[in-house]
Image 1 (cartoon, each protein chain N blue to C red):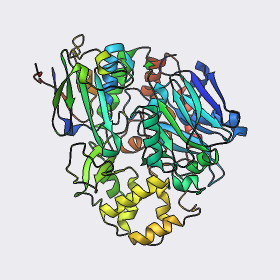
Image 2 (image 1 turned 90 degrees about the vertical axis):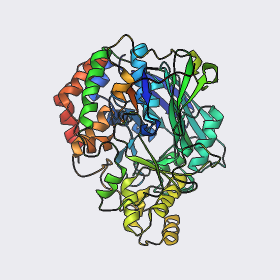
Image 3 (image 1 turned 180 degrees about the vertical axis):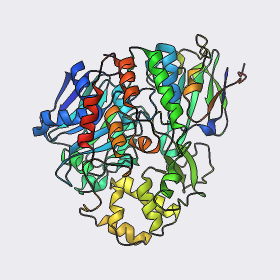
Image 4 (image 1 turned 90 degrees about the horizontal axis):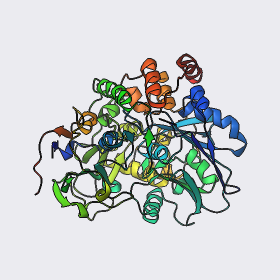
Amino acid sequence: MELKITPLKCTGCGACEIACSMYQDETNSTMVSSIILHREEKKNYFGIMIKTQKDVYLARPEGPEWLSQSEGASGPKPILLRPPCDGCKNREDKLCVKFCPSGSIEEGFTEEAG
Amino acid sequence: MDLYNGRLLVVDLTTGKVEINTLKEDFFEENVGGILGNIHLFEEYEEMDPLIIGTGPFTGTLFPGSCGGVISARSPLTGNLSHSPVTWFFTPEMKLAGFDHVVIGGAAEDPSFLWIRNENAVIREFPEDIIESWEITDYLRHELGDDRVQILTTGTYGFDGGLNAQIIENYWNSFERYGFGGLMAGKNLRAIAVRGLGDILLANPEKYMKGCLKVLNQTKNSPYYPEAFEKLVHSYSADPGIEEIKHRVDGCFNCPIPCRVFVKYNEPANELSSTDIEEPGMLLTDFEAFAILRKKGLNGEKAARVMEILSRKGIDPGVITSTKTNAFEGLLKEIEEISGIKEHVEGDIFLISRNNIANQIVAYTFGFCPVLSHMAEIVDYELFSQLIMDGADIEVNMVEVEGRINKITP
């Protein structure tokens, strides 16, 4: 994955979800992105999950974890039905990196689980 | 229609009728949205004693701080048409559900909630005995099967007829100071629930993003960046005192300068996992009220616990300014006994501060957070005009808009 995530810098604002939808579908939406914001609100437990080509990366605050795509979150549009992150290959910039206000998502490399 | 939905939801709780009306381009050319749109709609629907929720052109988009919406109604406290911000995640979801403005009038016969999604809405019955805000949100998210449903409600105090009843955003205090929670209770409306599964289209996505990025970079020059809660509490000459209970900072939808902080006092603050403790603490939102509690001598944890009680009961934290005691137990007793304190209410539009007032009204109009507008110099009529052109391909007369904003600026 061509991204480096620092979960504890995340503020749960969801800018990355919308930025990703701008890349995927040129629209503002939380339904078409490769990124899903997960929040257990009363516990203040939050982070993002990213669908990669093979797996799903969970940027959990207590430490990252890889899941298979079938194990990803459910919801109105499960991650299984979403496009995988391709590192914004049709652009010069990565939109989630550009619009993440806290620096939680940066350009970099994270090895996939395999 | 791009950038906007072009859709108005009108709900009459008395008759149970739900109408979806078209808002044409000329409505937005004239009113832009947000507070100006709400004022226009209030004149049209005044006889229904409506509660109106408005989004702006930037709400729900990549524009920084685009959590911003505005709720307008005749205040039970002042008798005037008044306006308060809606932040966190409600109004972006409302816009993604397909509505720019929602008008809720009349009163339901039985306890009800309004469920908005997929360009439609229904009025449903709500259990009589669930009246605490946290329980209401838990109940609705469970019933509707989605943790990202966003909810406006009030709490036990509001549903018991309290005058200072505040609208609560999911679980947390909002910046609503005009007793709109009581207005909801009077309408037998236990909650408004919304989930946005749609999208907001743009006429020229690339140019719109470029403008948003420019604003984002400006916010990073703010002295409040990258997080603001403690700095805002300090601005009221109070020491936050939350070092030992601070968990993490939280941003509202697409906000670059989070001004909320979650504190944990029912489990260790440094616990990062999702544990069996369902209610480990409280999200502190109202930095002004928190500062006042600290100045009354409460330590950070006790002040946070007071905020939790206020949010559960749906009591406007602004009442703290009127309470005399500074002892924890005495303060809670006084709050319990509140029957209507008006002294803390100023004017008809909630303002974060007396600085940059016009910029806060601009935020209410265009659909971004007035707290962000207070913290960062981002108001730029020329850029905003261009963004509306790039987003919606419509031309707004900014001289007229600025004139209307100045007219309502206190």
